[in-house]
Image 1 (spheres, one colour):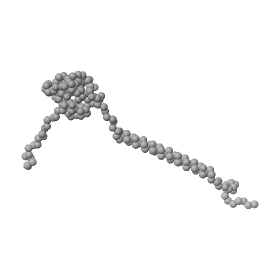
Image 2 (cartoon, rainbow, N blue to C red; image 1 turned 90 degrees about the vertical axis):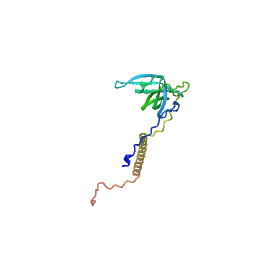
Image 3 (tube, rainbow, N blue to C red; image 1 turned 90 degrees about the horizontal axis):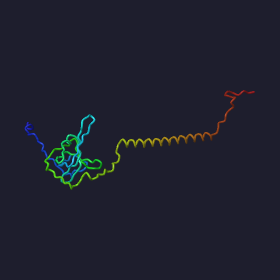
Image 4 (cartoon, rainbow, N blue to C red; image 1 turned 120 degrees about the horizontal axis):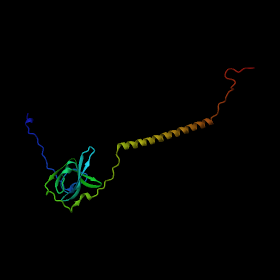
Length: 200
C-alpha cells in the first residue's frame, strides 16, 4: 500500500545544445545548430507515383563561416533567403568529397528570429574543403572468405588426385616391367590332357 502512495517520477528534461558550424564535423548526425539562409534554390522532382517532391539547395552560415545544405520534403518549402532557422537532429554528410548539411527522418527545422544569427562572409567556407576518403578496410566478408577457402580446397584436391594418378601409373608400369622380366612356366604336352599316358 505504501508503494501506491508514492508520487510519480518525472523525467528531467535538458535543453538541447546548439553547436557552431565549426563544431559540426563531417559524417556526424544528431547535432543542433543555428544558421541563416544566404542563398537558396528550389526545384520540384516528379516521383514515380505522380506526386512531386520539393528539393532545396543553397548556402547557409553563422558567425564562423558558411556551408552548403540540401533539404528534401516538407521543410524545403519553409526555407527562405535571409531567414534564420534552428537545425535540429541534423545530418552532416560528405557528397563528392564536399561537406554539406542535410536532414534524416528524425531531423527537423524550426524558424527563429531573423537577427539571431549574423553570417560572417569572410569566415571559413566549409564546403570548399576537400575530404579524401580513407583507404578501404580489408575484406572481411565471410562469403568471400568461404569462396577463397573452397577454391583452395579444390586446388588441394586436384593436386592430391594428380599425385594419386601419378602413383597409380607408376605402380602399373612397375607391374608391367616385373611381368615382362618374370620367367614363363613350362607348358606340358597339350595332347596329353590329364589321365595316364598310353603305353605300347
